[in-house]
Image (cartoon, rainbow, N blue to C red):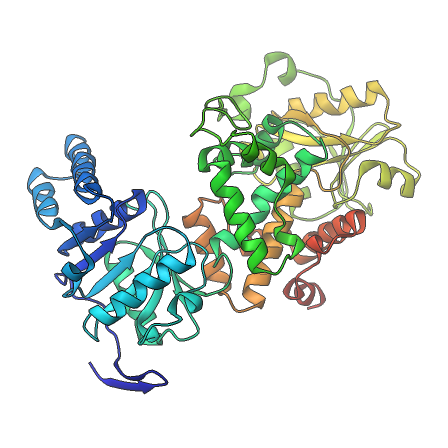
Length: 517
């Protein structure tokens, strides 16, 4: 080690703890136990501490049961299981952790208790030991306030379940030494994780960029645009493993609401992160999701995962859709054309139109641009007009959202629905709201990722990696941007802004520059 002198005095520049160096974890809940298991499996002696009597020992016993399951499945040898368990031991007090090379705190997500613990550890541990916080949203700079050696504090944010989830957000506070963050990055890789660096800003990467996935659906529910089941089905059709409503039920509405509220308050009331009255009503009513047995759904929703080929009926497969014209240009038009060919739907091609979508006799189906069907029908003098959502993953779509202008007749509506079913997609008829479900959600996810990069929270690769590994998104924000192009994303956001006149939909400067460039 070499010596480094900063505002806090002499401090040894950090290196990653050696493979057999002792590690301590404070907090024996689900996250703390998972971190302890990962560290022990990587070869470290681990002391697990919790102020609740017997909690640490109980957590270690639970780890043993989890490892038993791996042995039974043939994914771990019995001898390895015993070796891992031999490295785990409970600790009764912080004084028992004084020889640790790294201590990770995983206690209650509140600033004051964390600050008090971190100051205590700072005074107890040897000068070359590292201290990490698993906080999901509290500022690392704020947590370091009052520490004698704030340079050794790093955010080390794991994701649940820790043994399975690969992502670790390595978070820098204002006084974090680069060598300390680098050491945590190296250690994370040695533990089989994929680290991404994040500057300490509200929500870091994942909890910040993910907000629109919940917020846009909650806004649609408040507008009575569709049912939770319809909106979930639409987003699963874009490649997400779970729809927003079923995911919020799984997370717990109390937890999800508090994270949103925390990010909102930390950003001084920025409308982009505003909590939802719909979710607050669920929390106030005790409808917390699966943990209480009811949320948007009663119990566990029966998510469907059938492919269009499996779900389409024989009558729909043989239905006559009449003359079909594929209109316009762009990635979504090309995807739709390829999918219609796959499904055996004959069509003409007109790339000269000033709109993108499909024409069916007298009805135009426009890919949504963040504008209502009725608005487009009025502006274009085309009463036979509907908007359809973005089919980002045509072969995985369970249902595609569609909304009709007010003057579209029943026969035309039925014709459009026949085409969607012919393509293997259940028509999800929503209220005529701007942006439908997938388009407004994806556009906002891209926008949030762009702002995170613009503000120096992370880089583009880090944003994509974090969202795919941290919350299992089918793509990262910049991968979607590369597919759709800045013009399409900015156009959708501008349409939403014009419709709602809310700063929530302001376009990131980074996206504007991509549009101009």
